Amino acid sequence: LTSLPGAAITQVKINGVKHKFSTLEGMSEDVVELILNLKQVRLKYEGEKPVKLELDKNGPGQVKAGDIETPANVQIVNKDHLLANLADKKSRLKMEMVVEKGFGYWPAEGKKSEKLGLIFLDASFSPIKRVNYQVEATRVGQRTDFDKLIIEINTDGTIKPKEALKYAAKILIGFFNQIVQPKKLETKKEEKEKQPDNEATKLTLEELDLPTRIVNALRKSGYGIVSDLMTANLIDLAKVKNLGEKSIKIIQEALAKRGISWQPEEK
Image 1 (cartoon, rainbow, N blue to C red):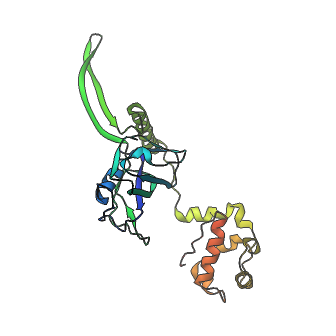
Image 2 (cartoon, one colour):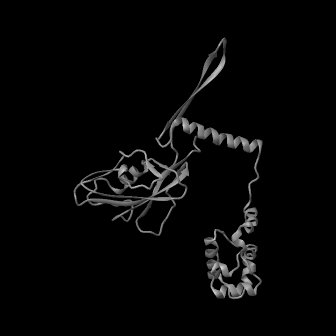
Image 3 (spheres, rainbow, N blue to C red):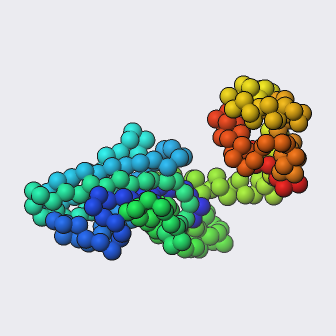
């Protein structure tokens, strides 16, 4: 049950706030209290990539989780959850939040950003609040040597307890299947060797829209198509005249647009 995925707010940027120990004019709570309240917002998110949420509320009155604007694939479960109190008409709370999907607990400690005012939150993704179980002796017909397992599951509302148990059972089955029918895990080297199967690796260097000087430098060293680059390491590339780190970065960006991740090894 601890392996169930969930969604949580991981970042917030509040207008007029430079750091989490600030206060916002017209808001009863300080920023630390607001962050604690944001951590308790429970969400259902159907996507995989980080998604942005927005809130823009004027006072006076309460600001609740339901005031947060969400895209179609994000649903706030506890809409009545209080975030803050705004004192008067002049007070305003405007902020942007990032929601991510994950497992377990992600601490904010150690995360840094160059953006002024961006605050990272400790994120608890697990939809499970509490689990309890007990085993009782039970009788079936005339036999009294059976046991009955009783499991009590409390969730945060983003998933029903019965569905959580089914999901956890599927995860457990997957672990056991790995013992019965183990699947070989591909190493990074094997994954890299498979990359040339991609249709994009058959493209010529000109088709990548690279600068002419880079194309000419590579062609003079025997590189004609993308698949030629996939087998090159940093030592090979260092031998290419007029091809420096900046040029390699340009090539990487061009390949990324074609869906190819290329990181030449040292040897």
